[in-house]
Length: 81
Image 1 (tube, rainbow, N blue to C red):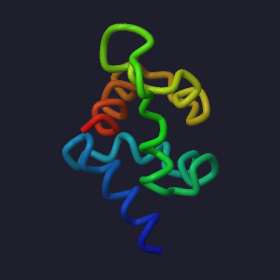
Image 2: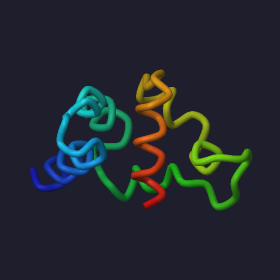
Image 3: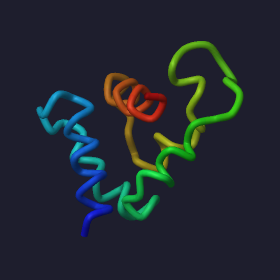
Image 4: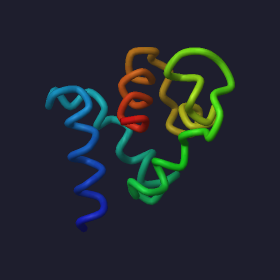
């Protein structure tokens, strides 16, 4: 469907087409219905700590089982863009 394709395309675009973030697609589908609007809700209205990750809901990466710092940064930057 178009919504899932948009998330897949977004994930690929975050790492310039390398596809390393596509491993989280099934988690996005499970946790956020592969919906970019739901993913955007991970952005906090107020930063709770300094840095890019401080603007993202703390449980977001846990829900995705995303433990790699580099992947967290790419996802956070994508959400904040």
